Image (cartoon, rainbow, N blue to C red; front, side, top):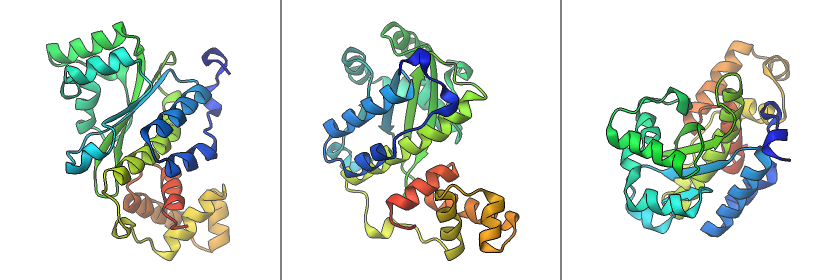
Length: 246
């Protein structure tokens, strides 16, 4: 399927790819998976980076990206990370944001954006903030010909928030930051609600199954998302499954 044939309204990522991320040993394994996600989802590029200062960072790759090698080398060698407006705006927003809303505040920020276009990064982009189990801050960015604005933005954001969380946790494990103590404790009701969501049930059906109100279900799901540090219920379900909670 080519980008021009791709319908973002029905975007899906093969569940096998999430399992592959979880089981990957090397950066090359991850890059292969990221390329497959890119090719199957209609985007042009995908980039993940851990932004928190981590002593063990050297054990894991600082950047996972499908951008061309020339731009990667320039970006890292010039230290553009600290001047990248998409990264700087991340500290001001907990929600995904499209590049069209970014206003460059310094000449260096404008330089990064201008050069990124010159080196083929793309005109349209969506940046998704990520937070790990210990609050580690990361970033996932996707670019493409589509303008990542409503209503397409929510579709991309839901799907790639899940991709980002898997990459974020893979990086944290490689950096030696994960142990059994990092697994959050969910209540029985929180687990029940997430498990039924994983089966594809919505609020009313979950209410019927559990015999509690839809308002209570929303509360349990909100609490579960907070404990799992996920922006979406879909992401919380994915993380709970990966951690063996449900």
